[in-house]
Image 1 (cartoon, rainbow, N blue to C red):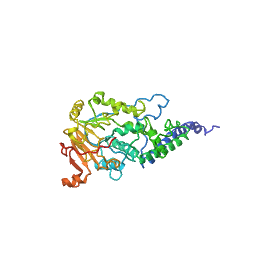
Image 2 (cartoon, rainbow, N blue to C red; image 1 turned 120 degrees about the vertical axis):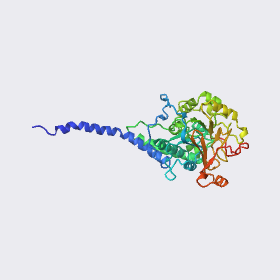
Image 3 (cartoon, rainbow, N blue to C red; image 1 turned 135 degrees about the vertical axis):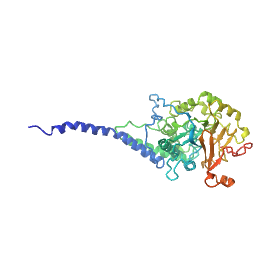
Image 4 (cartoon, helix red, strand yellow; image 1 turned 90 degrees about the vertical axis):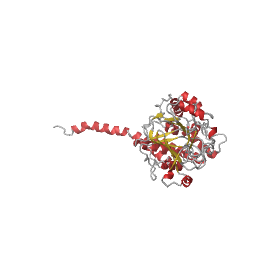
Length: 422
């Protein structure tokens, strides 16, 4: 008699193969869950699903292993944008960051989600130091970057001198809250690594503290854990630097506007703007040693220069600025942060130098948020939350959000500015 049960038995291997294939995905699913859980905890409640980011390299692969591959190039030049918002230094103040974005109508006032459509946002650097929300801002800007991309918008982040300093391990301007925030990150990151290490199908996680000293001269014991956490996170090819800071540009050209944290000299342009972006990005990824390239150091560095942001207009080197702009095809103005403008965003050198650092962070001068809006190539205006301007100009509540500019102050005297070193 024939065995009618034979056919089902023959189909069993296919079912078993399907089950085996599903099981193979478990380690990666677990890893993704752990990473998302750590992100949610560290970022203050943001769901930031991990993506296959082509700009990210596996951190610490260069510690005694094979050389890291070069990541793909960053985009230095962009065509004119229908609407561009430029925001100055943030310095660890998440509340002021969101106030600025709400002022620009880029985020929903309640949910904080991107509502800027196809707008372009440029943050000109100095997210780090002087405040306690540094990581939260990095996570938040990354969240907006993804949300904007789904709507046809663009979020561009840039290096300031404080990003360079922190990747190099210079923590002179870190706050106690900043140390605590990174110490909390390290605790959760290591918890996540221990969870991953329990899964046989995953590669053993790298120790982020590998090579980090256990103590530091002249650092109080209570701050040692925070210092170690910052080094682990932000050193070249660290988990935070490689994930977030590696996406930063050092120089950016959008239409006829050049963006840079400090300023550009002719020598920088001659060296090559795309080359500068590539070399700094490679350094952040751990491909170029411990210290940033030479043009990131000293008073004439691209992230330190103040030649075009002096408090008195007549002391700004307008002839040098004009020469620099003439060497960049189509460039009409340079937009910079770095030097606090106490009376708000302004322009000098016939508005060829636009200064947008208003010192909004509570770690600086707690200035009122202002942002620069550029429509098309040259239509500029300043969006401000300053109630004094509203009273002075007798504007309506709607109009008070905008003031013509940037040359709204008498340039022969120049806008008063407060210079906060570094």
